[in-house]
Length: 355
Ligand SMILES: NC(=O)c1ccc[n+]([C@@H]2O[C@H](COP(=O)([O-])OP(=O)(O)OC[C@H]3O[C@@H](n4cnc5c(N)ncnc54)[C@H](OP(=O)(O)O)[C@@H]3O)[C@@H](O)[C@H]2O)c1
Image (cartoon, rainbow, N blue to C red):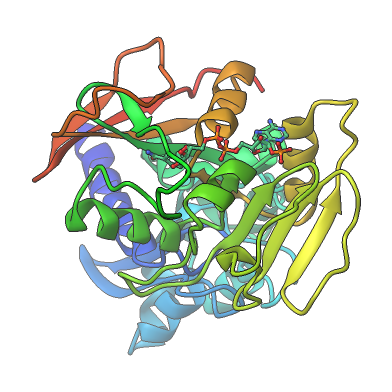
């Protein structure tokens, strides 16, 4: 029994490794990997590489050279196979047709259009289905996908850099140029671009748009460009504002709708109600399942004060500013601390919050 558990976990761990190779390319779909085992050997494996492209189960079955052994093989997959037609046909039909009779699943799909129906379909056609293998690890890998369906909002990552003495920025004077005062170095910059490439949307407050004029693009890494987002009641941004460059899809939440352009859309908020809740509701309706919030102070504190956030990634730089804009504070201990060249990266989690 113990040996069976170890074997199941070993092959499921391979599924999770494969699944993670699709990171940043599959959203709003989840990260899924599959392996097919015949007589203790992997004879096929695959992962969901990109949104709209074949699912992992299809790729794994395709890789098997001798399809006649599938009837005596076991398929491992970290998420319940789909049973509905989306961009691709249902995987349950393919598995049943292939003859595979043993299926080991990591977690049940939280999407209400699957949510146990895929498992039922497999069982009704005579398959033996085992579930719950490395379930927590699978949910962790797909935390954006699970948060989207369970909390009806994107998974929220707060990110900022603070000086060694806890400032987000120096005090800006009239003659100081527009643009960021860098706290960290090239390594941290690259890391942030990798994170952008992994998430579906990236957001900054209107103050940061004016003072730092960020592009919020993936320039130091390869990957998909996330949706760019800002929020400002008047959205009265100066000429030359990078977010208005029409290069990539951008949303600005405002009080009054302004004329849209090719890639730029203004979305109206009711300023008599909670603005953050409205933003998250709108992002849910757009099927955005992850959001990285890159500042500034007011926007980060809105999320922290509401308690609606999932993870914070905070770089503490090695130089002091002595005065400036105080960085937000988090009243819990980091779950991880990583020492980089010019900073310490602290990771916080807020996974037990209900909203
Ligand atoms: N070190 C870092 O990691 C980092 C990162 C980003 C920024 N910064 C620094 O942070 C400073 C800017 O801070 P900040 O507090 O002024 O900027 P911010 O949070 O970027 O922008 C504040 C503005 O955004 C809008 N906003 C923010 N939260 C909102 C909410 N909950 N509801 C509605 N509107 C909201 C409001 O715009 P309106 O007033 O127009 O309605 C608000 O005045 C700059 O000095 C910048 O360099 C540092």
